[in-house]
Amino acid sequence: MKALRVALCPLAELGAESVLEFELLDDKRRVLERGRAVPAALPHLPRTELVVAAADVLLVEATLPPLSGARLRAALPALAEPHLVSSIESAYVVAATPAAGRTTLAVIDRALFARALELLRRLKLEPASAVPEQLALPLSAGRWRMHLGPASGCLRLSALRGIGCSPSQEDAPPVELRLALEQARDARPQAIEVEGPCPADAWSETLGVPVVAVEPPQSRSEPPALELLQYEFAPRLADWRAWRPAAVLAALCALTWVVGLNVDAWLMRREAFALRAHMEATLRQAFPATPVVLDPVAQMRRGVADLRAAAGSSDLREFLGLAATLSRALAADGNAVRALEFRDGALRVDFEPRALEAKKLREALMEKASAAGLAGRWSDASLS
Image 1 (cartoon, one colour):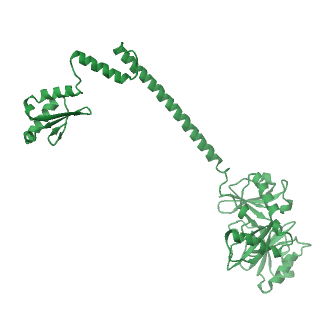
Image 2 (cartoon, rainbow, N blue to C red; image 1 turned 45 degrees about the vertical axis):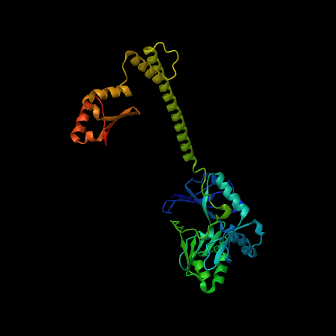
Image 3 (spheres, helix red, strand yellow; image 1 turned 90 degrees about the vertical axis):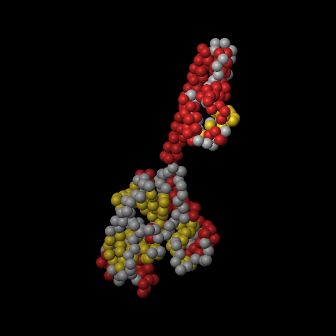
């Protein structure tokens, strides 16, 4: 997934006219482009990542109590409070993944951080991740990494340790770097990598540690060491704006289905009215004396039955018609018939079992019935 990586200026100075540095990353987290733009002119990509200025984030090492969930979250401000000058109520505190009970806390001004996120969201930039600038620098084994900007800098000491730095004065190393080396004592790095303009040879002589000038990395594949978007600032699991095209398409499909269903029902009703009108016309043409048409099919059947009765004939599908046809077909075998039963338009004939012991006799009776235009099948001693 392509991503936009934005380096924020100090949060107190962030506004609509602030010029921000950004990077465009491809699917493999390689840097495609670097640039500078105001927030409204930033590119819109599927994923947005923030790098919060080191001056806005205080990193504190702490020992976590054996708590989890909401109870651990409530305990984090108390762990960070001894290291703060301002009120703890205005601080937003998150913790990195602990190791052996120790972890690093990140402390940031809650109101300023919330204002920055809201500014970006109004521009339809929904941050999916935010990391401190000092922990966003690449890290090599046995080396420190420093980034020098025109107004400030930052230094990464280890995976979860880093500090903000003042800009270099008269090509001298920042005072924070000197203090960090003094405090490191025997844990001094093998070398210090510096992004930005610096007199590497002069710094190496001054600090007593090799200083190497490096270019910004061409890839950002390292996972976040400490995620700032936690708790109330965590990314939304489902942003309704991302589902807007799908919702519109679903609504259009539902509307099309409803319209199509109503059109189909109207066509079927129209066809039913036309068919009923045709049946009524046929009935009135055959029986002009019909006063009112309620059920054309039933009235037509009743009229045909009345005509048959008046002519002295019966319907072959009724009992009398079937019985008469069967009697003519089986005139020579009438003594073998034991009972007749008419049900659901079918005539069942029960024969004497002894009269049908021979298979040829059954076949002969079936041939006679077929010759008379009757269709049937045998079941034991019954023909239906």
